[in-house]
Length: 421
Image 1 (tube, helix red, strand yellow):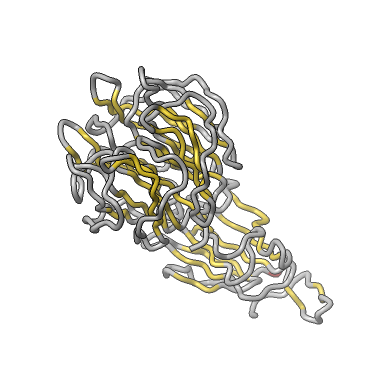
Image 2 (image 1 turned 135 degrees about the vertical axis):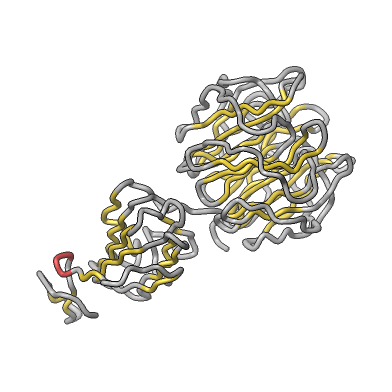
């Protein structure tokens, strides 16, 4: 390894390794989509034109150091992804997606040992942890002429699998969200009457049997991940009236009791995670009109008051996170089926309408997959469908893909699970 040697120590292996005082900076600014780095060096990484995957050395010794710097303050637009090349990163296997997405960020990585591997010694600008996107997803439950408990798994490439006979009580108008970073939970819904049952999903995509629910039984509600490893169910209809209550889910999948909600009571709205551990609920139906209002959720699961919405008021739409820190609301019912979408930036601001791609429909599901992408699937046009539409990491919705599995709608739930591809 080349570079200035300073303040060195001789390790028991007999090799002389540079300390921080001997760090050597590469003279060429990295502009490519990939770069392989070496210990003892600092790198200026310019992602103005594209994202960049940084591959760390395949072997390392305690004290090895690598520094990465956002050369053009563009990591917030085009992130860097860390490939730990077979070694652990903060104690996690390199199957995790590790991204840094803050403009002007610099990362000082130090290798510790085989247990914890590479550790960020310093993270200037913000103390962000790596963002871990779920790789796989699951659609489950719903209605296709009768309530069902079947599920369909989605692989890390966005391919929807065939029907899997479900576990638990068949129901529709159900909600789902990821929790614990790699698992999911389905809860509430309509079995013929409103329900507060829940079903956990393992990081292998296996749906567990019913758990007696906590909180007010209700249907047609949304759910979202928040705080990176927790979930929140909110709003809905209790069988007689619209509600604005919420129920938090901890990182072990345990649902807490009702919290009196903030904002307009409604149902048939969407919910999704955005930013760094934040969430947003938006749109819906209050019993007399479609709505375009939204409510932000902070990293502690507290719902904020109503914000006047942007975009066409509608109900029966779906929402999900994409691109690690953004969200998308799509489809729904206006005065007829719609394929409109609205993107949400990393600050929780909803953008104006984008003319949709694919079959206009409502009462569908949506979830993230592949770390930074998303998928809308199923729903009704007046007739139940099993089409899906993939969403890339820039929030662009692709054309219809003929679905696999039983066509269904009426709020079949969907959520991401598994951080392993």
